[in-house]
Length: 432
Image (cartoon, rainbow, N blue to C red; front, side):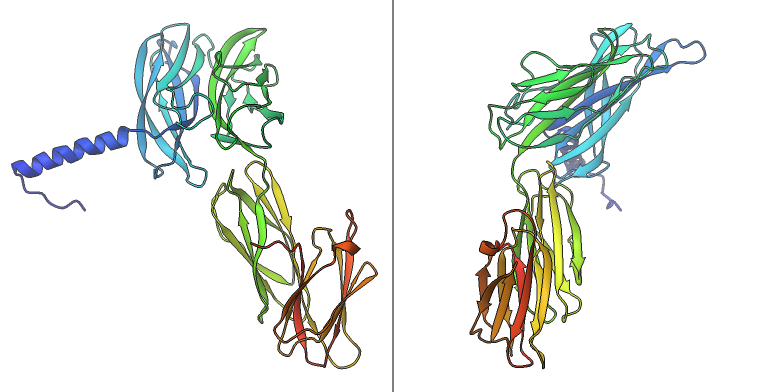
């Protein structure tokens, strides 16, 4: 509840200053990362005159702490010189990806048969490979004779991440749905020199082909497309679409962070993607393991820790993860955890199959009491760890016995006095 203010000169002056500062703060927009203007014919009943066009303006701003429901006002230009304010409301917040999406609608009277509606507002991101810090402009071709029609429906994310680097060639399809049933698509790159070098577009399929050869791969590029309906080669209506492109040629990191022999035995896996950000963490296999994946926003570049805990300590455990970033790069990691014990009678053995060549390291976390020795059979080739001490951690690389392609089989045989045990991990040997 707002506190009661006494009516006096000083509080009124302070209230006026506060209101002015608040108005300035809420009307100032952060750098723009994406924009689109679309529209639909909005006839006035009963005789369809005068003609109104229902415009929708969609922008993505750099995230600076905005929340869903916040508003910002932009100016829409149309009819060759008329203007109207558009209040955009934040509908989506993606702090992990660094942007928020805001949408606004306005329905002005349009008099010219063919007109462009456009935005010309400040400003683009100030750290781009092209058009850095420039005014943000995007337009849409309106045809008021296109009764019951709309502009084409299209869109991409505010930042399109591509898996690759300079010199690679990318295909970037622009989603397209016709606004006029009988029309055909006619897509074009907007303006001379506004798009990155090495970029072309198939006008009929709305597919961009781009081979970036210059620029800083750590920065983003901005691209603009006019997606139109046409009859033959003549544009009829269009939607302007402006968005960012980013290159990411690095797979996400998925490394062993720590192992606690327990009981219960559990391991921590370190996950991070510092470029486009982690999009998903999938559990491909979870044998005798409970898995805890922390919640995160897609596109997060922060550190994540996945914890796997053995359920039955007397059986082997396996955890296989696939980490994918927003560009589509993927990394798999799948350590095998087993607890080897020496009981009475003949030495115990355990066999593990389907082991990829990347998982070529065997690490023993000896218990108390622990094992005295461990025999390791890799595809028929024998290895041995002798003289293991209580509580010792020892690692052996068995890559020499594993084919470069295909899967391997590893058999472990314990040798010790009855009662000894150790946790054994088969993994890639790479840790944080």
